[in-house]
Image (cartoon, rainbow, N blue to C red; front, side):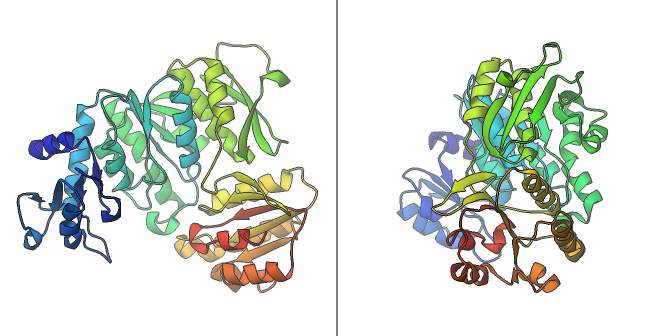
Length: 431
């Protein structure tokens, strides 16, 4: 490992797992997947300018630029952990069923006001993405924020062993990846692996104290708290009637009343994002960032990637929230939309994937919620929804697109929410 690490540093920490992203002098890691074998592209990588190719198939080796290892993925993870051990900086690990990417980006925005902070790019939050993120941290960075995703037991624990976070955030525990985790209790057990790791390491948790599930799981952890209780380290207050999240916060020791002028006006749609923003304020306060800089960072953050994002088209106002969906986030989005002050509302909802045996029950519950709230102007997209209800439903996004082309929508506020696999971007094109 020391030899590989020396080469890694000599290559200016420039690595890739994709031959389409080869840059001169990089190290290519030949990962394998279900449908591909990176070993067969090692020669191409070297011809394109890679300095070395890390492979685990001796048959592809044709010279000194090949580095043979037992398993490329394991080597990548071990290299990342070895690199992490050389870094004398705090690392914050973030996981949760909903909101972890938004929280990661908000925390990064706040910390960057004072510290040179590296963070997970995009959705690189799995057993490959976490090592790749760690390997981008340089000696110039003073802090790092690492997102950790999981869809089965022991995955968060494994990511913790690689990243060795000093601090941790679980945004919430909801009905996500029920199939892989084995139900909601499995999700609770899997996500809380971050808390158990931090207890073992004597690390610190940033805890949403109002969440009784999280509070119970973190009973034995060192913690910094945020929420509505005046004894928490950071206390927040939210304006729940606004389209965009508006909130104010105080530290436990600052007893002054919150005034209208104190509210931070964010670019985040959906009151469910309030806790994510308050968490970022709590982290910033803990790391001694000035209050006005914290507020400025949160206020200026603009969501992307179709997460809680408002888009105005020629005809309508769209709330784009279709990067991912599970029963917890879907219910929260619908409840928030119901309470929103908008004249002509419509919903386009896509199937929620990876729910296993709970899939039919959870999709039926969403349909029932629409009826209960009398949100009658909606379209359902996906094979699961359409199997439960024939009216106002389509088996795929292309069918929904054809319907909307024939029935143009105008002057509406439209919530678009569903799992990424349903491809609701096709529907957006005609709204």
